[in-house]
Amino acid sequence: MNTAYLLTGGNMGDRAFHLQQAEQYIQQYCGEIVCSSSIYETAAWGLTDQPSFYNQAIKLQTLLSPDQLMRKLLEIELEMGRIRIQKMGPRIIDLDILLIDDLIIETNLLSVPHPALPDRRFALMPLAEIAPQLIHPIEGKTISALLDACKDPLNVQKK
Image 1: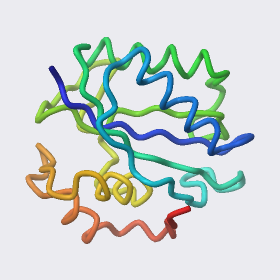
Image 2: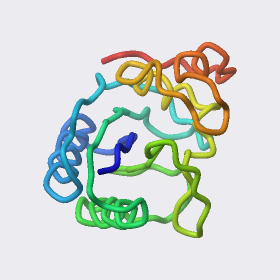
Image 3: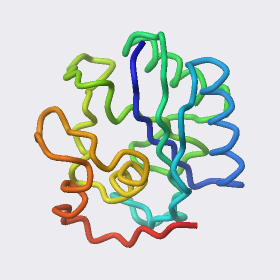
Image 4: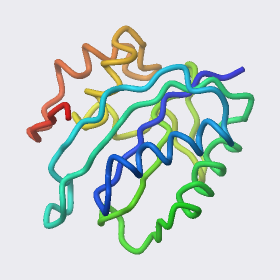
C-alpha cells in the first residue's frame, strides 16, 4: 500500500465542482482518499493572464504503483475534458502527484517529489493543512518548514 499526496486544481468553469468531481474519480479509480484539505484560491502562477485557480491537497492510500497512479490521473484529466494545449495555461482540471511515501522517482512520466513543490505556496498551503509534519525526502524538512521558507509571493486564500 502506498500513501500518495496529490494536488488537484483548475481555473475553468465551476472550479469547486470540478475539484469535487476529480475527488470522486480518484476515489473510484485510484484508491481510498484518507483526507482532503480545504479549497484554496490563488492567482495564476507563471502565465498570469487567466482566471485564478482553486487547489486542494488529497491524501490517498493506493495499491497502484507510482507509474500506474500517474497514468490513471492522466486518464481522469482526459475524462473530465482536459486538453493539454499549453503549459501553465487555463485548465478544467490538473492532477499532480506531490509525494509518494518517501520515494524519489525521476522518469519521463513522473518526477516525485514534485520538483516545484518547495517553491509553490499554492501547493504547500493545502498540503501543510493535511500533512504539516510530513518530511520532504529530498529537502529533509517538514512541509510546514518548507511553507515557512517559501518565497512565492502569490497570495493563497482558503475558500
